[in-house]
Amino acid sequence: MKQPCVYMFANRRNGTIYTGVTSNPPRRAFEHREGLVKGFSSRYGCKLLVWYELHDTMIDAIAREKQIKGGSRAKKLALIESLNPDWMDLYETLI
Image 1 (cartoon, one colour):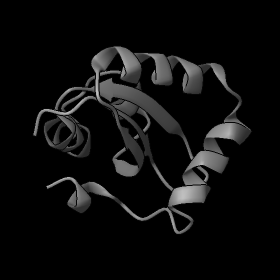
Image 2 (cartoon, rainbow, N blue to C red; image 1 turned 30 degrees about the horizontal axis):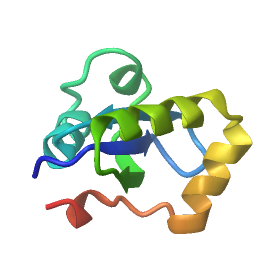
Image 3 (cartoon, helix red, strand yellow; image 1 turned 90 degrees about the vertical axis):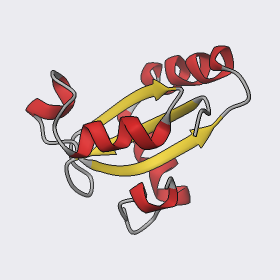
Image 4 (cartoon, rainbow, N blue to C red; image 1 turned 180 degrees about the vertical axis):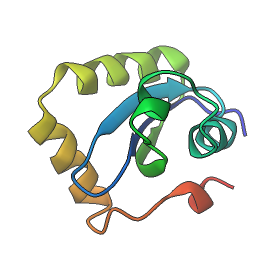
C-alpha cells in the first residue's frame, strides 16, 4: 500500500506520542511495532498506532505533519480522542 500518511504512535493511553509521516503505512507501522525505528519511538516504546490520516500527496502529508507537530499536546490528544476514544491499536486497519 503506497499512500502518503501522517500517523501517531503512543506507548499507552495518554502516554508518550510520536508523530511521523510515511508513504507506506503498513510497513512503517510494522517497523514501529517491532522496534526497528531507532530513536525517539523505540526509546519510549511507542508501538501503538493510535491515529492516522491518509493524504493524496506527500506534500500534503508533510504539511499536515508539521501542523500537528507545531500544535500543543492537548491538540494531539484531542485529535486521537476524536477518532479513537479507546486508544485502540489501529495497525490491523492498515493491512
